[in-house]
Image 1 (cartoon, rainbow, N blue to C red):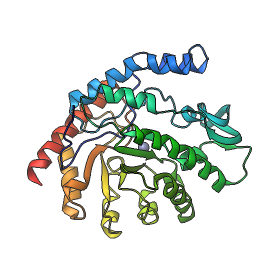
Image 2 (cartoon, rainbow, N blue to C red):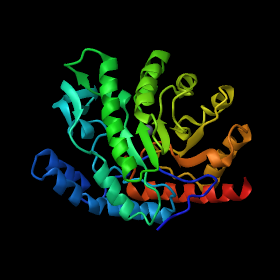
Image 3 (cartoon, helix red, strand yellow):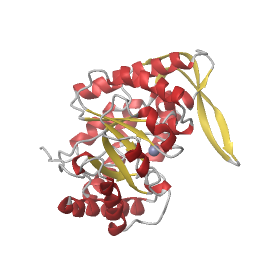
Length: 330
Ligand SMILES: [Zn+2]
């Protein structure tokens, strides 16, 4: 079954969706070694079914598996790579803790980490393309403790190798959209940091025949923007709505010319953006006259995992409606 992605303003998602069904329980069972990795991915399918049902109901063109297997975007991979141990809980503020995994040896890929869920999602997507989404090397580096390497470049390049292997396995299985998530980059918006990631991305994406996407969100995106424009990617997927579209004039200023994943709904707000509001956001971008509608992908700012399911779904429904209206106009 093949599905034709609209030529203008295709709609998509950044990746994560609220944990549905028993996903959280199943993740805990896997953490406690009560079930094998194989059983884990088998059991998580019910949750993926629910996610995909919502995406298809809403009419999203390019979907994801909702990252139902991933409790955390770094820990998930750390648990499956050679070279890590579990790590302690690190306090972020007040009583908010997260587990920062510790690098204790040479980082190596043991086996695929995201392909099983991705393949399954393809089976139930009614032909809609499914993004292959992986946490990027910079974010893996920044959100881990290093007790082994003592050299950030060496770490990031070893992650690059691991990520490229994973992506190549996806490509061999027909992946057409590959997204690398780098939320950590915007927390350090400096040229040296952006260059460090560029070297890794050059390695990761070399010769990759698929849509190459990098997702970055929050922080000082406008400071980062001039340093990332020559990245070897087809598309940047960026947050706009949460920062009240502050980034828009900078796209014009720096001559932005790539495809854009345009974040038009706020994943930190329970308020569902109206169709009209989203359409106006699209108008704002089009008025800048920097890229045509065929280069604009309409999506949320970031993953939807923190929202209640009904709100996440309503936001997607309105997004799709607004994109349809925009297609008539532009
Ligand atoms: Zn994000």
